Image (cartoon, rainbow, N blue to C red):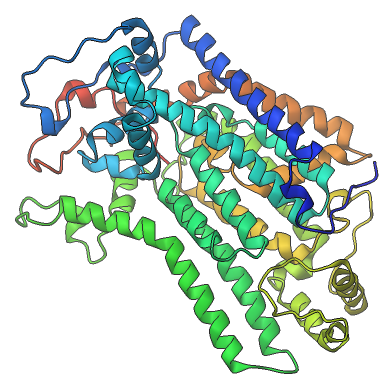
Length: 532
C-alpha cells in the first residue's frame, strides 16, 4: 500500500474523508462500550457494592430533611448502581468536595466538570432522576464526548508526526478500541487526560505555543502523570538550544529566550498539580495542633499525593513484587510487552538518535544552516518541528552522509518513511518512563489504562499491522488482545482488584474536617479501591 503523505498542516484539520471515518469509528466504539456496560451490569452483580452506600455530605450530615422524591426512581437507581470503584470517588467529590484525606488522590478536573454540568446542562433532570444520578449521567456524557475528541486530536497529531494519513487513521482506530476502553466510557479521568494531552501535543507540534501549555496543564489537573507532559516542552527547548548554540550566527539573546520560554511553559504545566497539593495542605494541615497533624504534614517536603499513594494503596518501589500478585503481572504483560517492543524497535532503528537524545542529529542540521538560508528556511522562525519537504530532504541527506542514523528498509519502517526520528524520540522517552513507573512502583494491573494514552503504542501497532511481512500474523494477535479487553475488560478489572478489599495496609477514611474522627465503618468498608 502506497503511503498517503501529508505535506501541509491544513488538510488534516478539515473534515476530510479520513476524519469523518474516524469520527464514525469513535462514536460507534463508545456506543458499543456503553451497551456492554449495560449488558454486564444487567447479567452480573458487581463485586464492589459501594454504589448503594451514599451517606450525606459532611456539610449536610446534621440536616434532618428527607431526600426529595424523584419522578423516575428506577432510572435514577440504575444510573447510581453503575457508579462503582473509582467512579464513587469522582462522583462524591463532585457532590461534596474533598472531605476525606485519601480523596485527594483523585485530581479535580473531572469532578469540577461533572459538578458544573450537573448544575447547568443537566440541572432540569434532577427532579426526574435525582441529584446523584444526574452527577453520574454528567460523568458519562463528559467522558464519552471527551473520548471522541481525543481520538480526533490523536489522528491530527499522528498526521503531523508520521506524515501519513492512512497510518495515522489506523493508529487512531486502534485507540478507539484500545484495551482500556471501559475506563474511557466510565466515570474515570482517562478520557479528559487523553483529550488534554493529545490536544496539547497537537497544538505544540503545530506551532500554537499559546494554546499548548494550557491544554497540557489541564492534563496535569486531570491525572498526576499529566505533569510528565512538561518533558515534551523541555525536549524541544533542549533541541532548539542545541541548534542555536552551534549555529554560525550564535545569538545569546536567542539562547536566553529559548531557555526562559521552556522553563516558564514547563512551570505552567506543573502549576495545577502543585497548586492542588498546596490546597490539600491548607485544608488538612493548617489550623491544627502538632498532635492532630497527619504524619505527612510534619515532613520537610509535605507531599500529600505521595503519602496517600503509599499509605492507603501500598504504592512504592518493588512493594508489589509478591508471589500472590503474579496473576496481576500476567494481566498486565500484554500491554507492557507491547510498550517494550515499541521502545526497543525504535532504539534498534535509530540507536544514535536515542543515545544522543537527538542532539547529534541537531548538530548535523545546524551544518546545513548556510544551505537552507538561501532557500529562505530558518531553523528559528518558530520552535515548531514542522518543516517543508525541501528542508526534510536536506536533513535526511545530511544524516546519511554523517552515518548517524541507520536507515531502515522500507518493509521495516513503513510508518517512518517520511517521519523524523528526533520528533518521535520524546514519545519514546515518555513511554519508557511510564513503563518503568508502572512495573516497579504501581499496582501493575493498572498499566493497561495507565499506558493507554501513549501515542507511540498506536503508531507502533499501526506499523505492525501495515507491514507486508508480519502484519497479518501480528495484526490478528493485536486485534484479539484489544477485543478481549474491550468486551470483557470490566470483568477482568474487577477480578484484578479483588485482592485489595481486605488489605491490612488500608485504613478507613480520615476526614480533614474532623481530624480525630474516623468516618463510619459502613462507608469505609466498601470504599477501598485501586487508585493510580
